[in-house]
Image (cartoon, rainbow, N blue to C red; front, side, top):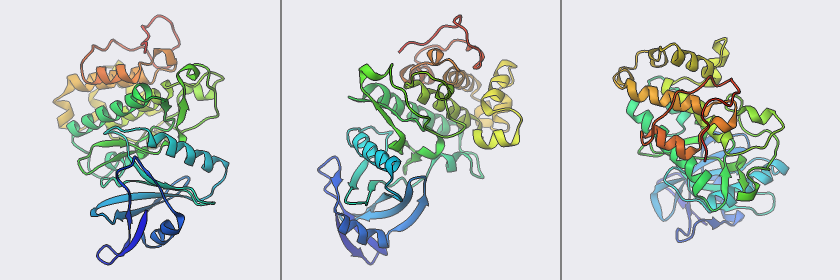
Length: 327
């Protein structure tokens, strides 16, 4: 990475060798860049800035600067570089460069011009129904890639709207692999770890002494799919209501009152068959028993109507009678 002053842009520009998957960056260059970068937001592990490539003044980047290099932050950094560096999919954010000199830890990503899915869904105006559906499909495909198509299986562990970014075409990109759990095929059944993720999206098995698998991401996706359908935040919903969003959604489905989920959304009302399919898929995803949840490949197929979806049981019931989805 090289730094040069950009009078037109008002901050330092960054030049990366785009012939590589990603670049290792000299801190002496990054330090100068960071002084001039536009501030984006502050996250759990540090601050995110905005920059521009010197080789292309129209191409912006996001630089994530870790605030403290403690054990947890160090682990996140190394995991993120390792994971993103070996992945490539249209529904994943691409890593362009990184810095790991001394105590300095930075990651350079593609800049997503339309912000997070959270801002998109929970803003003043409700996004179009068809656009929301396509975003849900894209996220499902990205997770299927992480779970089943990477050489090393990846569990994200923190799927939520804040970690889904939207590019200029509103294509969803899964971001923030800092909490990702890499598992070799022979380890997937035996891995155990501390709780990772965000309240409201935790799969029940995080609180039990059981093995953690890709099904924790399936659960989180199910919660987020309901948020995409309703344009309601599961966290905000639980603060204002006596029941959780997932329980309310299941009650609406059971009582055949799906119109309550979409209120005055005429586009969704005119697409009730697909709405019902999406709700059913979400209910399968949020089953408390992980063995009842479908794989992300099955989820993708069900969402797209490639395979039929059966009637789901109550998410909170543990029973062996309903059919389970096998990978």
